[in-house]
Length: 535
Image (tube, rainbow, N blue to C red):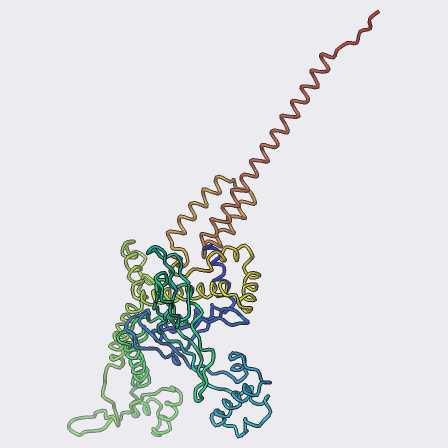
C-alpha cells in the first residue's frame, strides 16, 4: 500500500510539471525566504499543484517557520472570463449565468482600457477579458451531531444527523456533539459581489485527531513575528560593500598615470646640431609616442651657473598603493560571504592539498550548517505537499460522485489496477489516523545498506545476464524508492533463483529416469525368458 501511495503521488507531481515548481520554490526560499503552493482537485484534470508567487500571497500573522499557526491564506490571480466560466460551472445559454459574466466583464472595462459595452456586445468578445480573483482559504470550526442509541446504559449505535437534530425525549436516545477545525476555500472576483466554488476543503477525511490540512503549503526559512529574513538578506550588506570596493578599484585604475619621461630640449638640439629646437622636439614626441612628458631647459643663472628648469612637473607619488588596500578589503568581504553561504575552501576545492583529512571533513560539515535552514524548509515543504496530495487522492476514492468516479478511472489507467486496489483499502482513513508519513529520498546510510544487500543478492544468484540486468535496474530505482526495489526486484530475483533450481532438479530427475530406463532395458535383454514347448 505504501508503494502504491508513492507511485500515485509521483505520477501526480510529474503531470503537474513539478520540476519547475521545485526550482521556483528553492529560488524563492533563497532569495526572499518564503515559498508557497496551492493544491486543489480539478473535475477534469484531477489533482492540480500550482506554484504561488509570494509577491501576491496574503496570510495571517504567523510566528512559526512552518506556518502551523496561520488561519487564512490567499493570493491574487489574473484569469480570463472564459476561465471563470469553466471554474464556476456557468452556462452561457442560461440568462442568469450570462448576466453574471457580463457584469464581471463590465466591471473590468476601465481596467482593460476598453470602451466596449460588455453588457450588450457579442458574448465571444468578453471571453478574453482579464479579471483579478482572490483564491482564499480560512480556518474555522464545524459541529457534527450524532444520534445515540442506548440500551442498558450502554451505547449501541451512533448515527450521524443534521446539525439541527434534536433527539426524542426518551431514555434510550441521546445526542452527541463533536466540534472540530475545518478549512473553507473559495474564489472571490475582486471588484464584484461574486464568490464561487465556496465549500469545505476536499482534504478533510475522517479527521478524528482534529488535524485539518490547509490547501496552501507555505514554508519560510526564517520568520519572526511575521517579518521575513532571507538568506539573501544575510549577504546583501557584504555584497554591496564588494560592489563599492570594485567601483573604487576601477576609478583608481582609470586615474593611473604612466612613468614620467624628461626631455632636455637644449641637449636634444646639441645632439642634432641645429638651433631649431621646436621642430626637433615635435619630431621626437611623434617618434616616441609617449605620455607623461616633462620638458626641461638649461638656463644660465649667472654666478649660480647653468641649471635645468622644468616648465611643469607633477609631484611624485607611489601610484597604485591604494589598490593594495582595496584588494585586501575585497578579499576580506569575499571570505565573509563564503563563510555565510557555507562555500568555504573545503567546499569549493581551494583547500590546500596537504590539509589534514580531519580538517577537511570538519570544514565540509561546517559548510552544510550554513544553509541548513534552507534545506529544512525545502524538505518540510515537499513533505507537507505530499500529505495534501495523499489526502485528496483518498477523497476521490471515497466520493461517489460521477466526477470522482471518472477521476478514479483516470488514475487507475495511469498507475495500474493493482496499485489502485491497494489504495482502495485506505479510502476511509485520514492521513494522521492511518499513521502514514512521508520519507524523502534515501540517506547515504540507507543507500550503503542497500548496496551491501545487493552484493549479497548478486553473490547468491550468480553473475548471469538476467541478474546483472536486475542489478542495474534496481540501482536506478533505489535512488528514489528503496522499498520498491526490495518488494519487486529482490522478489523477482528470488523467483528467478527458485526457477533455476527447479530447472536443475527437473533435469536431474529426467537424467535419473533415463538411466533407470536404460538399466531396466539391459536387464530385460540379459535375462530374456526362453520359450519352451511341451511335448
